[in-house]
Image (cartoon, rainbow over all chains, first blue to last red; front, side, top):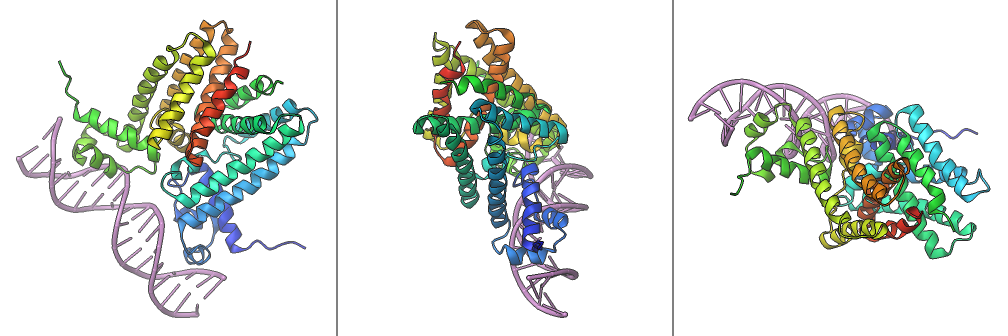
Length: 189
Length: 189
DNA sequence: GTCTATAGTTGGATAGAC
DNA sequence: GTCTATCCAACTATAGAC
């Protein structure tokens, strides 16, 4: 049984893609309704609080999407370092192939709204913490003590976010591949 | 002899501060002229190509500012790891004190414009590469081979940019301090 | 070189018919 | 729940007096 995609879901998916690429202020409500095909009235029916509410829910959608992606990537290898390297290198390959950072880069919207739109900031914070938990779980699985695993998970999260920016700016997956090669030192016991 | 600050410089400094905090699309030309005190006519006299030209030159200003800051921070310690840790921890302290990431965070404007405003992208790319050169020089000074130094410098750059985002999102300098503590592993020989 | 006034467009948001 | 028409504020940019 195929689940019909509701108008709300269509709007949210279009919004999520646009926000990832152009950021919060760079994306207009009119652009969202144009891409989703929905009329402006529907949008304000489903999201009465307007743009900020759409962005908050779009961030939650990105969060769930990335959780799935990370879980899949990290479970492909038996070796800890190789698992994380596979994850990062796959992001690099996707970027080189598509020319856009179409996954796992929330940094733009997070930095833009951190000091001005509290509800979006909270959603971004929750997303980052969820991803870090996935990393930390994997690290503990391989013998890292809880506190150390937490610090490493934050470091890995930071490296990836930063490398996404450097890759976009230099138009090359090289920075991402570069941090992948430093993971053995970082995760040495 | 005190050098008088030209109208152009005042505009550029205001623009630079606003772009760092609010990003490219989040900052209006009207806001820049309001903060700088200059009238709109002057702005378009000094920057005929408008907002994009202001942003490009504002990024160059940030670049030079950070170059000075990095050179100063890295020269305070004789020990390699301690020098970099001092640098990162100082960013964390500044953030905790001021509540804003007022230095060394160009990620917002870089990601926002990477795919749409080529001249700004090039300016950001040049800034990142300049900072990485400073890091790489320090690393080579302490015996790292050229290629390895380059990869580490990119990694450090990525970690800092990413940690700035996480610190802003979580409203705490903790992520920055966290990556500082992982530097001994990363820079071990 | 400096400043004002304003053009022209797009932004987010709303009212009300269906 | 869906869609259209429309409001008003904000935006970038320009023209032209001084």
